[in-house]
Image (cartoon, one colour):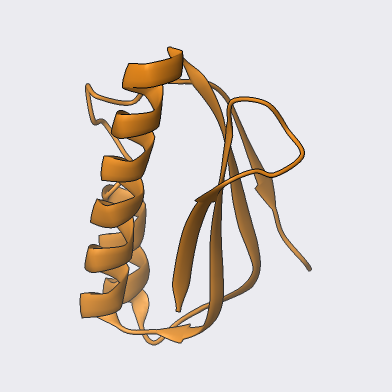
Amino acid sequence: MIETSRSPTLAATVLHRITGIIDQQQAEQGAAEALRFVQHLSSELGPINLVLDLRGKHCENLQAHKSWSQGFAGNPAQRWLYCAALACL
């Protein structure tokens, strides 16, 4: 499951969280929804901060991970000031 929401405690910050196992379709859909959310919020607030919470991230296969990561890579609509990734090793 992929959740994208506005942070209740950090101003102009979007939280993008992956929990559980995701397949390629979920990865593509989740990244697209997150990007739309970021674009909408940044049109209201200007550049925002993005926090990627990857502590529960587990892609079903490499193609699912690639689909998710490409949803954010090289997009001219990216409008964030800072991007932070939380991961558990």
